[in-house]
Structure formats: structure tokens, C-alpha cells
Length: 290
Ligand SMILES: CSC[C@H]1O[C@H](OP(=O)(O)O)[C@H](O)[C@@H]1O
Ligand SMILES: Nc1ncnc2[nH]cnc12
Image (cartoon, rainbow, N blue to C red; front, side, top):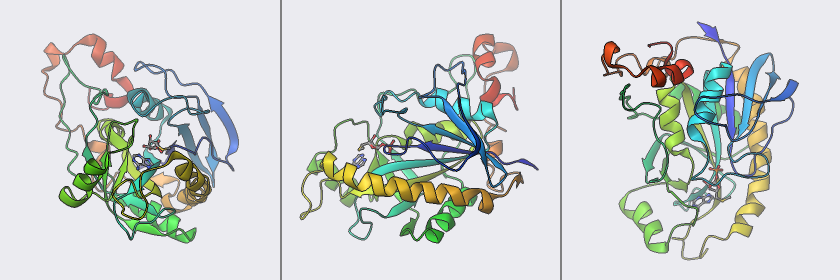
């Protein structure tokens, strides 16, 4: 048992949230570098909350340069237990339309130019990401979204691409027809992997802005169309987030799916062989087991 603290990572179009009591933008120092921005902290319905805009206020960071490790470390350092990622995405399914939300439960990671782990030489760890999202937290997001009147799809596979360009039509058809993906975006990897390494419950709310480039009647992805849909999606996302504290509660049991114990058997490096510098950097992420 412990206290819930909800962390929200806001994607494109979601640069703040409203309604927090005692709202304050706070700088958080991380040994993994500077996070994307300061973190907006406060309480919602008595539950502590921390909001971090993934690209920074003013959309400074591209998908490849978002400091994913610093962001996850900063949230963990603040005491966050549950991370809800809110992201824009393209759809590969006719029935998953722009304006709909998908609470995704699987990822295919096609990113190639990002730091993907907190661990490495001198402290090696292997965690499972077979089930990369937390079913309990995902269920709360689905319930919150439906209560807001949003069309929410329960589950789906998110293709994480490097970007920043959108996919070619051939790639789009490959991801949809051969790989069976449902949505596409540029940021949920390595974020979800790092959240698992940091023993945080993670759920991803993917907000559809477009049909990517496979759709015979919608043509190429167009950023101005995306931005038009993004604004409405961002308002819906803020409504969804406001409902989370009541659903999650202020007190938290140990995660029944084991997200908060992901490192129990993951560390392979013998204690006497561990790199002191790396171990020091891992204080927040892995301090429980180091
Ligand atoms: C605004 S279109 C492309 C951009 O939007 C998404 O960002 P986020 O996941 O942070 O909402 C997508 O992944 C791309 O980075
Ligand atoms: N079609 C798309 N591909 C990648 N990222 C996106 N974000 C929003 N729409 C997207």
C-alpha cells in the first residue's frame, strides 16, 4: 500500500492541464539530463498529480530529441506511481476514426535513434515488456474517456516510428496489412520501455488525428488537418485526465500486474562488478533493488 501520484505526459497539442489545486511549475534535476520542461504539480480531487509536456511548452523537442530518460526519471523522482501518456497518432483502421481515442496495449518499436534504457555497462538489466502497459491503469483511462463521451477503443497496437517525416504509402500499408498495427505515432517508444524499467505503471491514450497515408479516400497525411483535429482531441484529453483521480483513488495497492516490481529479477551484474557512477544515477529509477 502507498500513495497514488498520477503523472501525465502530454503529447502534441497538450502543453498544460487545468484545475490543479496548488498548481506550480517546478524544475526537476535529473542525472539523465534536463527533462523536456518544468513539471506542473498540484492536486486533483486530493490526489497528487504531475504533468510534463513531452515536447516542452512551445513544442521545442522533436520526437527523436525528446529526453525520454530524463522525463521518466524526473516523474519517478517526484514520487509518481502511475504514468498516463497522451499522444497524437494516425489510424490504420477505418473504424478507428479521427477524434477517437485508442488505449493501446501493444507496441512495435521501429525507432532507431534514441537512448532506450537506463541500464548498460556496469549495471545490466533485462525487464520484460511482453505486456508493456498496465491493465489496471489502462482500464481507468478507458472508463474516464467513456464517461467524457469520447469514443474509446479498448486495446490496439501502436507502431512507433522514428519520424519526423510521416510514413510513405508503402510503409503505411506494410504496418497495416502485414504487421497488423492499429495506430502509428513517434513517441511512445522508448517511453513505455523506460517506464517499465523505472517500475512505473504506464498507460497510453492515443488520440487519432488522421488516417496516415494508406487510406484511398484520405490521401497523404497533412499537418494542417492534424492540427485541426488536435485541438479538439486535447480538450477531450483534459476531460479524461480530470476523471482519473476519482477512479484511481489516493491510496494504491501494489500493482497486481507487477509493474512496480519489474526489476525484482532483472539485474544481472554482480554487486562487486557494478559501476558506482551508473549505480548513483539509478538512485530514483532502481534504488528499490540497488
Ligand atoms: C503533430 S503530428 C506528429 C507528432 O505528434 C505526435 O506526438 P505525440 O506522440 O507527442 O503526441 C507524433 O508522435 C509526432 O511526434
Ligand atoms: N500519421 C501519423 N504518423 C505518425 N505520427 C503521427 N502523429 C499523428 N499522426 C501521425
